[in-house]
Image (cartoon, rainbow, N blue to C red; front, side, top):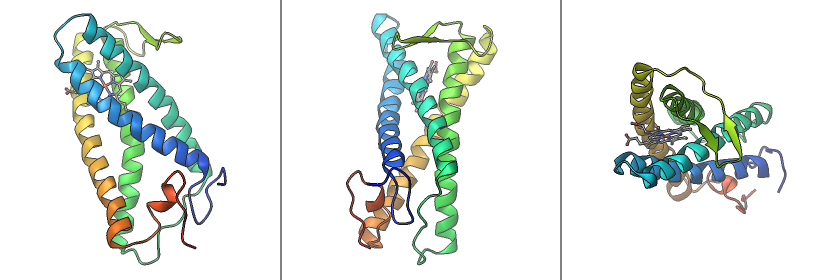
Length: 185
Ligand code: HEM
């Protein structure tokens, strides 16, 4: 499998980043939802710690992924796609890039405004990006909640489209992103 993208399929770096981030985001939605509903206590603090740590790693991986995407053109979509389908694919993909960068940033603001220390899995400390401020914390928490629903909606569209390509259109669009997917051409 080539490291870089080709006109037929995604390269190994793009595939690795795609599936690692996809898995991490699903775990993050579960952890965030669970932690938010736990009663105050050590378990809540621990679950949030894992949520925040993994979220900061997602932010780093997304910055890397965006850079890699900008220097590596994506394999083109099949010619048979209608204009609105191309438009929808373009905006869901770039929407996901934006959302998955904005979401950890809003989490980072909540944590900073709450004046909480942030050590990523105990490996390194991340500095605060705002001073302590209750109103900023509340605003960032509302943004974080809203973005989590936008992420869930966009991921649902994205998975729906991938399955449509595979099952209805029977093209290579999903296969060329699978870890060991063989493209037909
Ligand atoms: C892609 C990354 C992330 C995703 C998908 C995500 C998702 C979520 C979700 C689904 C919730 C529950 C919202 C609710 O039910 O009200 C949540 C809550 C929370 N997350 Fe994240 N999160 C991410 C990154 C981060 C990061 C990096 C931090 C901090 C450094 C963070 C801090 C928090 C905090 C403090 C809450 C509780 C908010 C509140 O008090 O209402 N998150 N997150």
